[in-house]
Amino acid sequence: MITHWCCGGLVRVTSTMLSLLRHASASRCYGGRRSIATVISGKQTSRLVRERLKKDVDQMKRSKVVPGLLVLQVGNREDSNLYISSKMKAAAEVGIDASHVRLPNTVTQDEVLRAIAAVNEDASVHGLIVQLPLDCVARVDVELLTDAVSPLKDVDGLSCINAGKLSRGDLSNCFIPCTPNGCMELIRQTGVPVAGKHAVVIGRSKIVGAPMHDLLLWNHATVTTCHSRTPDIAEQVGRADIVVVGAGQAEMVRGDWLKEGCVLVDCGINHVADASKPGGKRVVGDVHFASAYQRAGFITPVPGGVGPMTVAMLMQNTVLSAQRFLANAGRAL
Ligand code: NAP
Ligand code: LUD
Image (tube, rainbow, N blue to C red):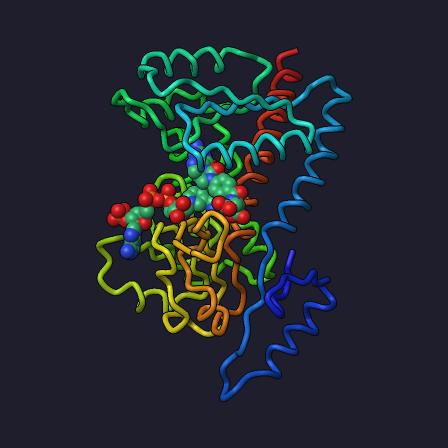
């Protein structure tokens, strides 16, 4: 879903309006420079995804299968609580049977592993995620935990099996991590084809940057991945038709880095001090929105961009997992 940023607000735009808007943007060019970007709303796109999934779930319920999701949390981080409550709300909306299990921060690694093993065995759960980062006193090997999740239920796509399949381009046979999957969905919304484009990803984490690289690559872009040791990030970004940023650095990417008209997707969630806000802080992305908006062709906002899509893609993976279980059960009969 595309929205236009205007007078400080997001305005819903239909596809016919979009072509008019593109024309309007072009007609406002000064000296060959576009004056404004089109804002891609994750809030609205995620709503469409949830509506589609609700229909799929209603269909599955006729076969007496209800998709089941379990979110395992260790400790009590405030940001995780917020993200998990969005996941629970989306699941209820779609018709997924979701549960949230919170283990105390005094838990040991073995206890978490046992909890994961029990969920792996529970046939009513089709998707299991361990919300990260963990908040616990004991030293815990996070990789060991994410790899303990059955690859068949790993709807976060963080296990080595799923990550390996994605890195080799076996996209239809794995779970794609939710944030990069959501970014691809937002890029699709622009109508800009990925194949043949030059894409730059900033960040190489297991949850955002590395799978984003793989996904763009296997959608046939030529991909450059930048990280904290890349000496010339602004130059790399300046060559990109598509830029995806997941660095965790508030407003790092500036408008003057960008190639005119590029697609810019901002995964960053950073809290910065703002005395004018009730909590004394506000959320910003990894992109300096005001300057990037003047130069990009398409841009995602923060909040309301990638975040809601992460939640929607978790719902999508859970429904996909339940569908795969149903198909396999049919084969076993
Ligand atoms: P992370 O694990 O800390 O990874 C950050 C990555 O960015 C690393 O690869 C790091 O490089 C690189 N980096 C850090 N500073 C950099 C700099 N100055 N220049 C270039 N690269 C730099 O973080 P993450 O989990 O990927 O998350 C990244 C951001 O996305 C955070 O703001 C997070 O809150 C947000 N996030 C949002 C969603 C969502 O749904 N919207 C989901 C997940 C994460 P090295 O590898 O060299 O250290
Ligand atoms: N761990 C995630 N840790 C953190 N933002 C999320 C997220 C919703 N295992 C595992 O859910 O996929 C994960 N799997 N993550 N994240 C971040 C990451 C995880 C981030 C943002 C949002 C989930 C979200 O809904 C809203 C928005 O951007 O509009 C609100 C943002 C705000 O803080 O106001």
